[in-house]
Length: 141
Image 1 (cartoon, helix red, strand yellow):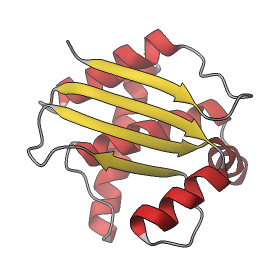
Image 2 (cartoon, helix red, strand yellow):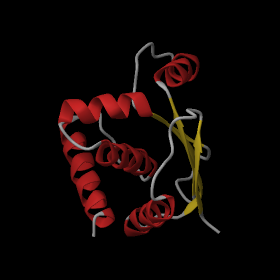
Image 3 (cartoon, one colour):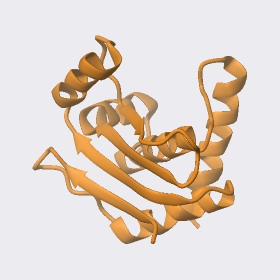
């Protein structure tokens, strides 16, 4: 049975609408012909994610998300996705959107990476943004 799990390393953070988000992410994956085994979202602060970025990716920068895939074959998806709630909050302020909107965008961004979407080139970034927008539209129906 597919599972989307949520864990917080930040005691003050509580994800709202867990069941709706779980159903939404399953729908996004299904729409892209994927299957989920287990995706665990871990919400943390900047310091926690920076340490992971340095240790596992050798990047010495703040980031909003790190996605770890746990198998080579694309399906079923099995992954841990780490999200800095501090980065999400700051980016929401910069982009002028509600924090929940930015959080949902970042969550689906990680899932889309698992589904094969990339964002290194301009063209790939445009495809990723379109897919994010289409996915968020599903949540807001």
